[in-house]
Length: 224
Image 1 (cartoon, rainbow, N blue to C red):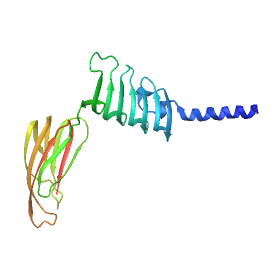
Image 2 (image 1 turned 60 degrees about the vertical axis):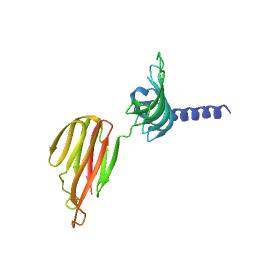
Image 3 (image 1 turned 90 degrees about the horizontal axis):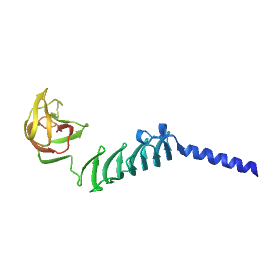
Image 4 (image 1 turned 45 degrees about the vertical axis):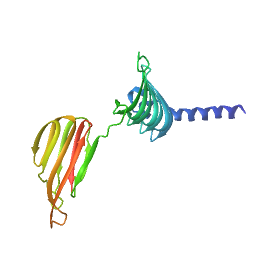
């Protein structure tokens, strides 16, 4: 009987060891390095779990980082409850400050770990679209620049257009691309141009208005 009890404890110990791991290899956020208890996938925290290090987090993980919904307590005792993406606060959440004299609770939205306000601001808006214009708009990361290109649909070369912008930026043109450096957001662009249809049998006049509200390195490609 004692032999079976010892084996049972050994088995339980091995299972607990597999479930709770040093996060030097299971969790990739350095502030959480210490211990991890939770689900794993390919050696990384993935699914539900709790990580404790300098800071502490309980919630969803993906590929070793907080990703989803969880509760994060930093070394100062501040507690954030809300959404995460790639290890950073991203989306709606509530921050409770440990030592605040006033306004100890902050509610609203976060991006890249930074509080952006009580209401979400759309990163960009499109309006006044006519003709065959089909915009592709994306942000490549932190910065203060906008790049606009107009693509001809038959030969796939760059076209010239007329662009009026409202806001503060330093415009320049290089090889058919329009750049707006040192931008102060929001910026609004009214673009007008003509291009052939996809069969090359007629010219189509196109217009579009694009408002960029969030800082970043923005690339706008107008396809037809």
